[in-house]
Image 1 (spheres, helix red, strand yellow):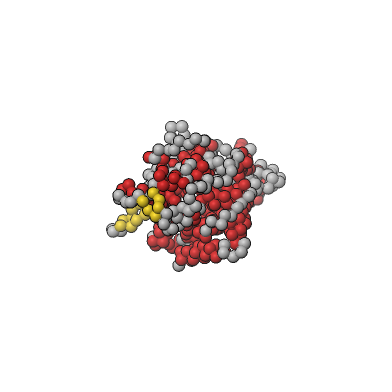
Image 2 (cartoon, rainbow over the protein chains, first blue to last red; image 1 turned 135 degrees about the vertical axis):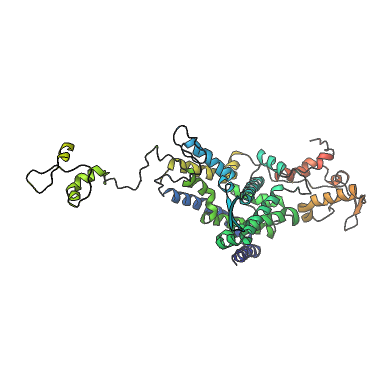
Length: 351
Length: 127
């Protein structure tokens, strides 16, 4: 089963890191060299990928028109679902990027007895997707406490808000629970629903299991097998300032957590996770539906080939067309020398 | 490449965001590494240094629950038989006298704000 393969790969990665740091030089490799490398791969290939996409021309407007297009003045346009202006597109993109509006519109078809086909709205993917992404963002920003010194104010504010319930010591973060819960939902959704399982690939399971691995090791480090945060910050802040320092107090589980993140970073630009950049480049979302107002010229048209109108075409081939019995808009001028050409009175008046 | 006017700024924003800690470090001065003051009174803590480093908050939490809520004993003994008081202000701070020089050193560095002092009276420090 594909999900077991994904789980196997992640477990193997964890084992690799756990054993790897016990080898001489392994701590430097997994603590410094690979994280730098992973981050470099992430940035460089992210840019390469986006540049590659940017090289593809999108000559024509192909927005999904899920609303009334701009039409006659008395017909009300749906400016967000079928925008015809840049501001409309910005509104649509903001809703898409920040609130996942497309997922919100998700529907589900069900066959009931009868047989009757029923369509209903299905919001679970949207809800858990949103929860996952926002808790991931919060967790990422909270981690800035390990990468900055002095720690900026917004991190303090996030920490305070996230641990607002003051449950236990160290304070429980709500996002930790939401993150793991939402990920579990997204994974189970693919595993349990038969039609989802059918279309799910290895590359769908792997990021989910990898993120679960990162989340679980992180949660363990905070609440169960606690680690020396000061030692870890010396390393993480050292990585940022170019003076990494691996304290002896850092234990295996931290290296597992770090290595899984390294793998995630390096894997990111080559995977479906590139929807992070791709969402901004979706032509069905980010193009204004203004085909009726603006002329969009295909960029790969050969400039030496001039536009050839039908009138020009007919001028070139009129005689042949008449000969073949094809209708022409402009009858040819009768040639007086040839008597077999049926010269009719009306064509004369036309020309 | 098409739409360079939008894609290049977009990519610059992306790189700027993901490298935030790097340029933030250039703009700010990092303080010295934490160096909590070692006590002069006692040589040994109630648990090993490693345990105290990672889990002192759990110990304090257990003490609070046990002593305040379950009526547990204030007094306890370390492994080598030294008696101590299970209390933040009368126990821990008997040796680690300064909140500023001991607690805050690491807590500030790691941006941890424990809520001990929501209830306990903060010691008035001379310096």
